[in-house]
Image 1 (tube, helix red, strand yellow):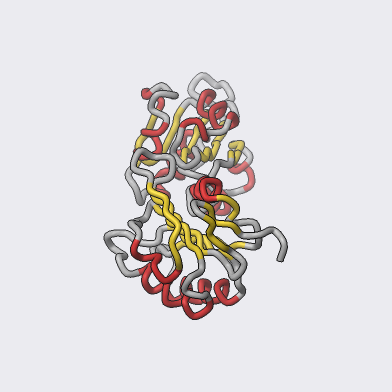
Image 2 (cartoon, rainbow, N blue to C red; image 1 turned 90 degrees about the vertical axis):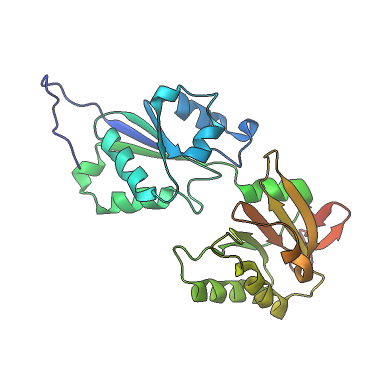
Length: 259
């Protein structure tokens, strides 16, 4: 992957930079100053089209490289190729790059590189506000005690392993956040998760279902474990399941700080 140390004019190639930039849940005002600075100084911005759409009014479109969903490895490889040429590259993600997103394929690639090759590129992870952070802030204090975050997508993790993890944290009476609860290819995943939760939680335990947070199509509702599958949900939904201390009061979902 590494280029020659000198370019065609015999000049040393400057050290490149690869920034993993979390754009937050989708609302421009939720993009951090550090993320905006990284975007402004980048020569190239790489990302999935949905995330690039979020920043279309913030960056020069001639610097943008769009990739389809499911091409995470290709994005990582292209970002490193450009950074090894001495460019400043930003790889944009929704939410936070380190949570179910592009940080993993980038650092997996780093792990396979030789030390001298790794030294040619400065890598920075710029955290972003997650959909979970945003959803929790809109319904009160659901995450005030210990909580676990589990993706119900079995694209990378076998479903039986997801079930074991969900059963373990549900049995430990932790607040649970569920990412990607369903999709057109996985319509029954949330129902299966509900069955596991009902083994450990009272049916009336409060649940927040937050879909498309910060978007025009945003829908946020508070329901119960017993009825959690009734609210609209898809892969762009985050669900927060309370613990035995959580209660709902009007539009709020409240987990007390004291145990």
